[in-house]
Amino acid sequence: MTPAQLQQFMLDTIPMARAMELAIDRFDGDQLILSAPLAANSNDKGCAFGGSLVSLMTLAGWSLANLLLGDDAASAEIYVQDSQVRYLAPVWERLVVQARLAPGHDAEEWRGTWLRHGRSRLAAEVVCRLADGSVATTLAARFVAIDPRRRRPVAAAASQATAGQ
Image 1: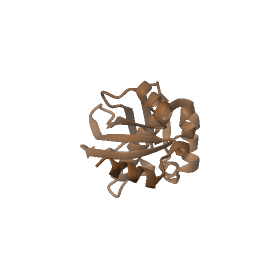
Image 2 (image 1 turned 45 degrees about the vertical axis):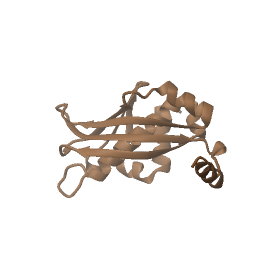
Image 3 (image 1 turned 90 degrees about the vertical axis):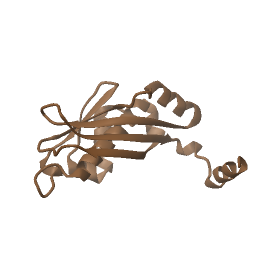
Image 4 (image 1 turned 120 degrees about the vertical axis):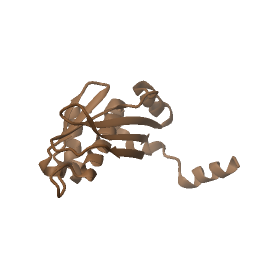
């Protein structure tokens, strides 16, 4: 899937992405940049709504995970597993976030594990910078990809877990 196709997919299937007026600005194979206008994502004070920021940042990590799986993303179910957000400064301008893999994580390993096992996990770091370059918000998140055709039945997974005890 190309970045343009992924953007259209999100706008068509994720109502919040459409309401946020999300756009994929750039993907260079390592870093993804997503943005959204302040007007569609402001709070009562006129700055960026924290919920919009964390949503845009989560979608940036999720988009990065999709794009790094390449053509295999079409058969993957990708979920955010967990995340931690830090709000450091208010955003009074267009929301622009940059997502990249966290140190120690590799795109080839993400894809290779997916192909071998039908499931994989990666960590991403997402940052929202202000126009002056200072950091406004950070997000550290883990994403998982699962091949629904190879999903283990819940009962089988539970019996495997108790068998090892």
